[in-house]
Amino acid sequence: MFTRSLQIALICACITGVIAYRLAVYAAFASIMKDSPTSKLQLVGSLITPQLATSVTASCINFVIIMILNFMYERVAIWITDMEIPKTHLEYENKLTMKMFLFQFVNYYSSCFYVAFFKGKFVGHPGDYNYMFGKLRNEECDPGGCLIELTTQLVIVMVGKQVWGNIQEALVP
Image (cartoon, rainbow, N blue to C red; front, side, top):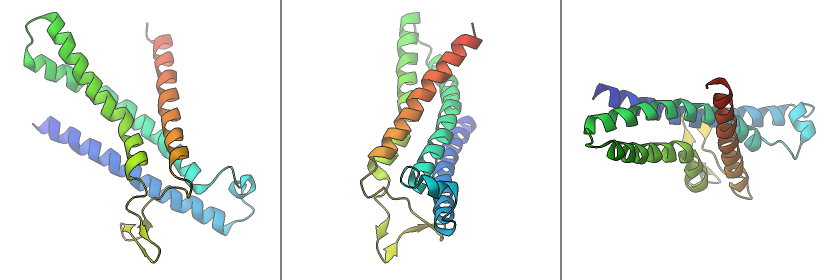
C-alpha cells in the first residue's frame, strides 16, 4: 500500500513539476525577448518564440520523466501480474502485456492529451486572467492553436524512444 501511494505521489510531483517548469520558462523567455532586443533569441525572431522554446525544453524533460516512469511501470506490472498467480504461462504473458500496454499508453501520451485538450482552456479572458501560484499566468496556445506544440511533443517522444531503443540494443546484448 505504501509503495502504491509513493508511486502516485511521484507521478503527481512529476506532472506538477513539468507544468511549473513550463510556466517559469515561458515567463523567463518572454522577459528575455522583451527586455533585450539584441539577444540571440530576438535575432532569430519568427523562428524561436517563447512558446516554442518552452515547448521543446519541456518536451525533452517530459521525455526523461517518461523513460524513468516507464522503468517503474514495468516493475509494477510484473509485480501485479505475479500477485494474480495466473495458471499458465500464456495467461501470465497476456495479463502482463495488457498491463504494460495500458501503463505505457498513459505514460507516453498523457502529455499529448494535455496539450491537445486542456492547455489554453483555463486561461481566463483579457482583464481577468487566471494565475497559478499567484504570479504565473496559465499557459495558452499560440493564436494559431496548439498544433505545433503537439507536433513537437510527439516528435520528441517518438524520436527519443527510437534513439533510446537503439542505444539499448547497441549497449545491452
